[in-house]
Structures are given as C-alpha cells and as structure tokens.
Amino acid sequence: MLLEHLNTKLKAIEAQSLTRFLRQAESRTAPRQIVRGADGIARELLMFCSNDYLGLAAHPRIAEALAEGARIYGGGSGASPLISGHTVAHERVAQTLADWFAPHIPQARAIGFCTGYMANLAVVTALGDEQTEIFSEALNHASLIDGTRLAKAKVTRFGHADVGQLRTLLAASQAKIKLIVSDAVFSMDGDLAPLPQLLALAEEFDAWLIVDDAHGFGVLGAKGRGSLEHFDLKSQRLILVGTLGKAAGLAGAFVVAHETVVEYLLQAARNFIFSTASPAAIEHALLTSFDLIEGETGVQRRENLVRLQAQLRKGIEALLARHPRLGWKLAASETPVQPLIVGGNAEVMQLAARLEREGLRVPGIRPPTVPKGEARLRITLCATHSAADVEQLLAALASAAADMDRVAA
Ligand SMILES: *Cc1c(COP(=O)(O)O)cnc(C)c1O
Image 1: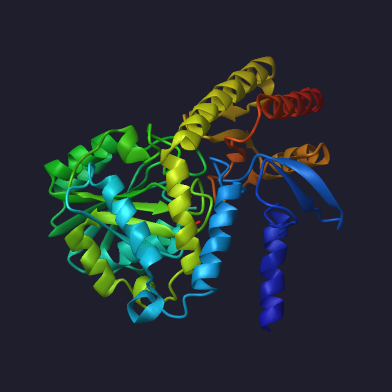
Image 2: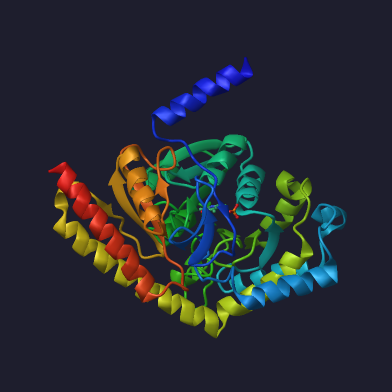
C-alpha cells in the first residue's frame, strides 16, 4: 500500500516536470568539476551552481588544516557538545565569531551548530515560545519556515521586503515578545533584505531581529563579516545566524547574539543538546578559513566577485534586450546569486539540460522552491571563476536564447 501510495505521488511530481536528480561529483568543489551524468559518464563541467562563493572549499590551506585537525583530534566528536563533544577548537571558533561581531552586537557570544538548517531550527523553536509572536518574511529559507512550524509561538507572515506591512502587524501585536525573522540575502533571488528598516522597526516596537546570513557571511562587507558589516548595523536586538558550509568553504553554522540569548540556546535548544557535535578537525580548519576570509585572499576574492557580477549582469541585460519576446528577467541582485527567471518548469529544465550538454552546470530551480511561473536558472558566481568562464556562460546563454526565440516566433 505504501509503495503504491508513494508511486502515485512520484508520478504527480514527474507530470509537473518537478522530478529532482542526484548527481555524483568525482572531484573537489571548484569552478571546473568532474560530474557523473544520468548516462553514467563522467564529464568535466564548468559550474555555476555552488555556494562556495570565495572558492575556499578547494583552497589548499583548508585541506591542509583539515588534515592537521584530523591528526590532532582524529575523527568524530563522539558526543553532543554538553556531554563531551565540545573541544578547544570549537571554543576558538565561537570566540573568533563573538569577537568579529562584537562591534555589531554588544555583549556578543557565539554558539555552534552542525548545519545552518539546525541553527535556524534551534533559534526559532527555542525562542519562539507561547508568549512570542514571530513575524516571518515571505521568502524565508525552508529551514526558518520549518522552525516556525515547530515553534509554539504565534506566526505571522509579512510580504517580501514589505516594511510597511510589517509595521502595521507589529503595531497591532499584543504579544509579550516579538521576533522578526528574515534571510539577509534571499537564496533564490539574490536580493538583500531591508535590514536597516527591519532593525529600526525592531527598536521602535521592542522586537528582536533574527537575521539568516547564509549567503552574506564571507561575501559582503570589506572584511567579509556579511550583512551586518555591509549595512553597518549595531544593536543588542540582532540575532545573527550564519552557515560555514557556503563562503567559509567547510561545514557548520553559528548563532551570534547577546550572551543571555546564547546562554538560553545552550540550555534549551534541542538541536544543540541532542545532536553530536561537529568533528573537531572541521572546527580546526574553520580557523584557517576565517584567516583567509578576513585577510588579503578574502579581500581580493570579494573584489573579483564584484567584477564578475558586473560582467555577467551586463552580458545578460544585453541578451534580454535582444530577445524581449522570451519574457526572461534578470533578478535585481547585488550578490553572487544572479538568477535568470525563465518562467515555465519544462522550459527552464530544457535550458539547463542544453547548457549541460555544452559543458556548463547551472541548476534549474522550480516550484515549490520558487513561485509558480517563475522557474529560473540560479546562476551563482564564485571568486575563482575567470572572466573567460563568465564569457563562456554568456555565449551559451546567447545561443540558447536565439534558438528558443526562433521556436517561439
Ligand atoms: C543554505 C541555507 C541554510 C542552511 O544552511 P546549511 O548549513 O546548508 O544547512 C539556511 N538558510 C539559508 C538562507 C540558506 O541558503
């Protein structure tokens, strides 16, 4: 019965062109990666899909630091942090992050998690108790949404970047504790949340602001500290969540907030208490990643990202001007996430498949990850792409657009 039931649901997914596939990479995460296709054949592809924005995942110093960490600490951590899994390496990572964000969050303290998904579930469920109302931005990441589903708090959604609506909702709220929750950089659109305005509302209405900076950490700000540095925010009401699996090139996540908030997470967040601590070797390597992010490597790579973004946007805008009939749109993004909105599910998957045949891997993103009718290529740039790599993508997109325009005519 179960298999029949699941097969019916799988067929419905297929009928909407929504089936997802797992592929196997055979080399490290880098702009060029060897990937085994659905036909079982391994090919080298030029990748525009990774969130390894600074190209640190393949950095030799990170690999060396991981190996060194493994020699010191061995493999797994063996237990949850409060039992015996917490090491000096975990503590140093937390201390570094607390120091980094002290200028933005007075009395900052940090706590680590194994993934950003877990960190988001932890903050939203632990803080979202019965006396709390959560104001959740419409385009928040799935992990924040899952957190609101598990939380005991009342949950109120506000429209994407709709500061006016949020103000009305906050003004009407009777809740004792108010939590505003928003991505800093929206993962499928690449745009930035109006964080200064959200924080001003938090100050005005005695609310707190949870910022998920998964795509800003390492990328935004002169030192790569992310959205808080980019907007120069400072407030005790900021609760920052970041992941270390994207620009930091490794794995893990953190929450930085006022020390009392973090102490409460340590006592109450079930995802922290009941889950094995991350391997210490990863924490050891994160210290090297932090050096790279704030040092000369990080500065140069962030500069290169900005150049590549400008090159890509200019090229795509010219292409859209030549083919208005296709109805494609380039999202208004100032980050390495540069989505090209194509529209239909089948159309975007055909386009992605064509690019792959030409040696380019750019994922098609479909509903429910994005709204219906707004399926898109989620192009992501990496600081280790070259200008020639971006040119190659633009040329492939231009020839695909010309062919699709002809078919549409
Ligand atoms: C990737 C992502 C997460 C989850 O982080 P992981 O470390 O990959 O689990 C959370 N929020 C946003 C906005 C993300 O893009």
